[in-house]
Image (cartoon, rainbow, N blue to C red):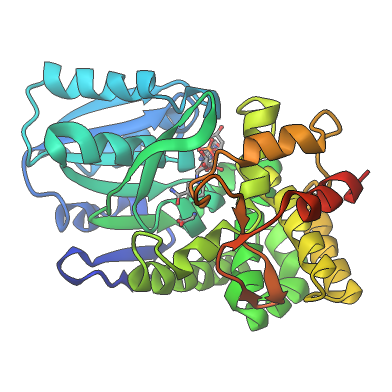
Length: 359
Ligand code: NAD
Ligand code: GLY
């Protein structure tokens, strides 16, 4: 088992990465601080892994909340169901919430943990590749609003993250590819050696080679842990993790939540950010080709949907947490392995990419 520390002073916590971790009761016991435990999961993940988790918790007073599966249910209404269960069972402030699922369950569970009685203990058990390499680490929690993705939320760090590579066996290929989009992101924004490793090892990752997957999860978590330790609340370098996300969130909101997977929208958005970076003279045509090629080899989409024209894109992109005084700001690439901080873009430059790219 690998153990990576997210260093945040008294709120530091470990990310455990390995195989068969969800059946290791001592991992839970170290981080649960009272008798009361609530496990949040969804209708797809619960039948697969809930029993294994519950059998490690036999000495606790455990309740479960099983939510419907899908990005469209990542709303305040469904978070309220968690509060209903906690209150109905008279859960106290020292209770522990365990989020067992992908990024949707992790974000919702974390947000519920942040809000219930102003904050209870929280453990992340990410079960998708995307959640293991990104969403479970770093404390961003929240829900969507019909007018904007992830617009309601809180920074709230877990007590630990338990990333068990074996649970990825049941993940379908489309979801695996979506997770790889966020893995590629680390190579692009700060780790050119990892980008080259990904180019060389993509066949092994797609074939679910355990050694390759574990290495990619570990490298991603190391990169993310360093960034979060340096800039927990995104006043600087953490924003680089949003490469492709301003475009991507517009695609998710504009297409209707759940039509594109988050990782798919991020892949398209990254290709758009890369196009803009080339127009700025920072990336060469060869860089652009390498990046788009890598997404294509992962079977990820690289062009935006035709029903979102430039005007609609700009409207959607103007609801983004990076924007300042209403100006759209995006992360671009200076080169493979180096991202900019958020850059204000004028509408004309943006329109060039939005009009030309992929059409
Ligand atoms: P998801 O949670 O919807 O999971 C994808 C699908 O896989 C779901 O149908 C789920 O039920 C299923 N699933 C999960 N684990 C499985 C398993 N082991 N076997 C079989 N099926 C399984 O999506 P996701 O891609 O994990 O996460 C996307 C969400 O994460 C988005 O809402 C995005 O905004 C959020 N996100 C948050 C952060 C953050 O920092 N908090 C970062 C990136 C993404
Ligand atoms: N996924 C972006 C972040 O955690 O900041």
